[in-house]
Image 1: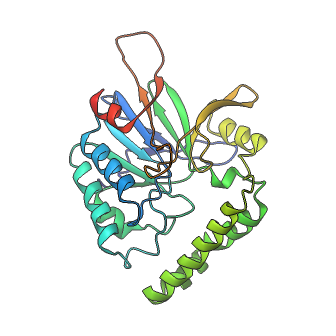
Image 2: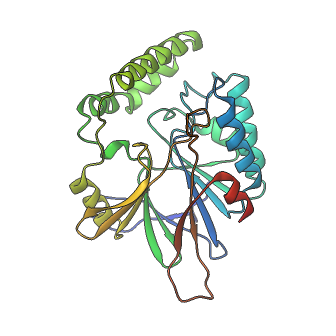
Length: 275
């Protein structure tokens, strides 16, 4: 599904955050992130595929890191092509939106068009059920991870991306492996990773005129206050090969016949298909 101008509107804010208006017929919205899909972890792929084929939501928002790595739309292997086909089939029955993560920020217009998903800016404010919800991957808010923020400031520039995408696919694959190995080395050291910066989160929420943020990236699922009356809901990562398998869907449900606000619930992928 291609984005049309009807999805977004803009209004004067402290800094500009796009506003997406949900269609009035939506009743159920699902949020997922941090699946880190890769050919070596088929159990997670199968769980995601079953969820995408059977969930009962009107729309699915993928808030980044659907893929473990993405080196460009022209470097697809059989596994990545299969993932795009799953998305394409899903978009025949529901809206699917994708917001870039720190692993798959190079997923571009060609892949979006091939799969039918709509690309979202980060952050974006979603208007649904009379409320606004600020959506973001979350990595830009983790200011305490100075090394990553320095890296991010480089790789998110048009100049770096143009240079990287001009390299041959094997060279891009090599660079991606080296970056992934470095990341895995950091994880093996049991480092405590930075969480989002509360004052910055509050500033974003104020600019979006809302008090509730939904994000991924930190792999610390839960709901908590971030100060100044603001709250956040953090999405779970997915790993079906873990000692205790992890996979969670955050579902936002609205019943216009009941005078209550929309309700957030955490579901297993199977429950999201049955409910």
